[in-house]
Image (cartoon, rainbow, N blue to C red):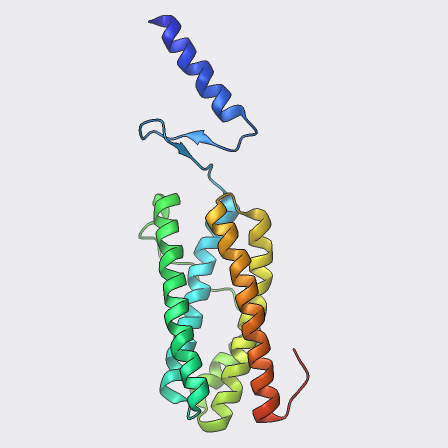
Length: 190
């Protein structure tokens, strides 16, 4: 019996010692990814990031008079809500101690705060312009976070999510730039 205990202990140490990549969970010896402070913080911040973009999309649907922008915002809302739901599942699964914890408040730049204020107070073409610029700025900030995430995450699902988010945000930034150029004659990409 004592030899069996030693063998289990040695086997456990060998399992966790292989590059420190995996640990044995308390649930039936199932491998689980190690905790990552970066990843945990990223997930909490990303939930707040997604909430902000979902709110922008909802406001857009209500206020824009442009059919193509309203349709974009409808699709954007469905996609971003789905992404937020997925991230919340990951948070609850990977970091159950965070479950029920209020999401982090999004870290936003002063420029982005100005755009948020403008979105709330404007209507018509001025609203559309402020919204497009806000989404573009928000995506640029999210793009930077996604790049960092691909190198700092321990879960492959999150790494793939961040890589996909980079591509999607780059395409959406190009779309925002095109509409700002077409509708408001500001053709300098930012």
